[in-house]
Each structure stands twice: as C-alpha cells, then as structure tokens.
Image 1 (cartoon, one colour):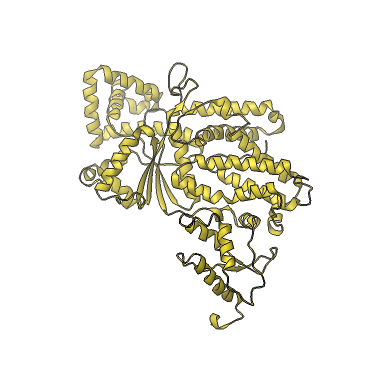
Image 2: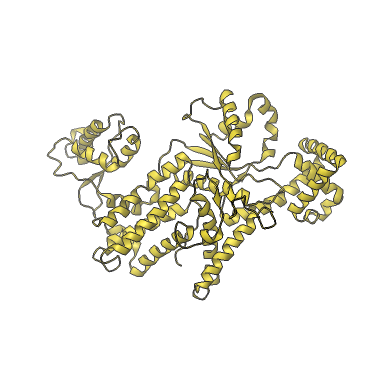
Length: 536
C-alpha cells in the first residue's frame, strides 16, 4: 500500500503538506495537490493549493492579503524532513507561464452559482430599437459573457413586449386599411414604425376604433386564428429588424416574450407560477433583470412578493436569488435624453452604422485603404466602431447617466475602445516582428520578473481572476473595463521604460512571453463583447 512505501515520494510529500495546510487553514480541510515539476522549472515537485486556498479564506482571514502570503505560511509550516532539501515559493512568472500553457480558462473564478438567467434587451414588438434600448443589450450581454467565462450556465432571455393592448390596435388597423393583407404580405405593413404611429393616432382619436381594438385583444388572447396570424406576421417583421441590431453587436439572446407566459396567467394569479417557472423549470440559482433604474421600485416589490410567496428565501445572500441590474440614461451633449435634431429618438441601427462609418473614415485617412484588403478594412471598421459604442457604455458605472459622443468614444487617446484595440494590435505587432514562434516559446521559455515594471505588469495580470469575480458578484462590468485600461497602461510603461526594450534584449524570451500573456488577458477582457484587432 502507498502509506507503507517510503519510496512513494508524492504521497510522503502530500502528508507533510497536509500537516502544514491544516495548521495554516484548518477550516478548509483541503487535500494537498502535489505534482511533478515540468522539466523547464527548477525543483522536483510542486504544490498547487495556495491560490485556491487564498480564494476561499481571503474574506475571513485578512492577514492573508494575497495567495503569495498563503504560500509563504504553508512553506513556513512544513514539518522538517530529510526528504525536503529546500522549499521555495514560485513567483508571479510561474503562474503566468502556467496560464499560457494551460489556457486562460484556468484563471476563471469559481462562483457560488451554477446556473443563471440574464433577462435583457426586451424591446417592444412593432417599435424600432432606439438608443434607449442600447444599455440593456450591452450590459446584459456583457454580464452573460462574464458569467459564462466563470463556468456558469447562462440562460439568455429576451422578454419582448409581444402581447397586450397595442396588438389589438395594430391588428384592427391592418384589417381596416388592408382587408386583403394576407395577399399583400409585408407590403401591407411597410415601415413598421410608421404603421405603429398611424394606428396609434387612430386609436387615440377614434373611440369606435379604440373599442374594436380592445375587443381584438380579447380575440387574440383567446386564440382566434385570424388574429393570431396577423399577430405572428407583425412579430416576424419586428424580429428581423431587431436581429439587425443583435447581429451588429454580436449578441445572442433567446426570445421568451410576454406571450410565452399567457398559458401561466391563471396559475400566476393563484400561486405566482410565472416566477416559479424560472426557479423550478429553468433551475436557475440567480435571476438577473437588466432594465433602467426607473423600474427599481417595481422589482423591489416583485422580489418581495416572491419571498412572501415562498418562491425565494428570505435572506439577502441565500440562493436562489434575484437581482435587478439598473442603469442610467444615455444623454446628448445638451445633457438631455439623446435624440435627433428634430427630437426623434435615435434608431439604434443608424447609430451603430454611423459609428462604423466614422471608424472606416478614420482608417482611410490613415492610409489603410491602400494597405489592406477591402475585407480587412470592413472588418476592422466594424470591430472598432461597434466596440467603441459598447466600451463607452461599459466603462461607466451602470447606475450613472453618460453622454453619447462619437468624437470622444472614437478617439485613440485615453480610456476608449479604440486606444485599447490599438494597444492590443501593437503587442501583436511586437511579437510578430520578433520572428519568434510564440507557441514554441511557451513550451521552452520561462518568465522572469526581475525589473520593477515587469513585476508591476505581472502582478496586475495575476489580479485578473479576482477582478472578474468582483465584476460578476457585484454585476458591475466597469470594474473589468478599469482593469483592462490599467493593464494597457502598465504594458506601455513596461515596453517603453525597460533598458534594451523587448526584442533583441537578453531577456527577449521572458519579455515576449509576458507580452503574449498581456495580449491573452486583453483578448479575454475584450470577449465581454468587443472584437479584437491584430493589426492597425
């Protein structure tokens, strides 16, 4: 048996480290993770519990301010043994090296939830998406992406407004204006936004029509075939328009609108089964609703009712739980709600296309139209333009209002997506120009953090997992944006202030690997919804 075999080195080391671990953090009762060191690292065996142990005790043991402090305590408490000649703590370079070889997924935080519903976007059918819909889409998608990276199963839900009085109004107007609408198809409806305005004008000004529209709602909800077909056609047209926005923003969301819950209405009235559906059928630990702050009171009352009904536990930090992710307004330069010059709300598709157009014009001004293929120019313009709009929203605390300004968000200076995307492209260029195979360097090279700027950058990289955890726990994407911007700044200092720079220096291999690690982490931060660019 293993315990009778003194030659079983791994087992003997595990016993010694178990004593130390139980001394340092007896409340954890962890089993030591001992493995053989890779050939390129000094040492024979390595112990891998320090980081995971620190994550579990950092909130209750303030004396341990980092995983390094936990590692030092474990080292100091290892019993004396003839088996151990020396014991050292692997520095930040080792952990970064491990990430490069194993993949950034090993830095994913471990959250308390396994499944979450993120309810976001939720536009109204028959109305075009406008700038007021922007924040829910961007923030909701980013929260879903952060949770997915943290190995949470995320159900992305789009609770569209596809039911209610307005559909009786739209359907009756369709029947009045185009009795043969089924033969005309979409031509009967034409511009859906204009169609909605005309029907609303009729609804507000014609009492007889209003009464018929209200009766039409009853027929629709009762399943009357004629009304269902008209409703289905209106919804189809709307969805196609919505998808133009989702495709531009690379957002994936599953529609479960108001009509989906029609079958649950009777049960909701008796036992709140609408809320119970998501807890009992979708098996979610956490239900997150992304809407403007103006709906905060509604959600407070809603959550309180769910607790009184027994659908949710009474405690604040118990699971399953619900959260309302509120956000502020998008303002124009005048400090008022962002609108066009004639006071119309800004169509979201037009706004995104304008961002891409401006981005493309800036690239053309820099001579990229002659250097790149048409496809490269188009893809980069999209990545930078759409990314600029997203990041301008995400970098702000979601609870605050922010001013929408194309010139600011498309600037290549300061805390903007353009600056960050260019910074990432520069790192990729440094690695390319070195002429070295970075994948081979990952296998053979070692990261050494001897210079002060190297250590600052390395330690910042190691904070990634805890930053993602904080951003997920507090539902604040701006935390990750701030980390990303500071990472870029730290890399700039590292690259510009080191003697000998990177390529051609005696430390070239180590510094190229540190550059690659920075690019990898930046790309994972970009995966909150921004497409990285590799040359600029």
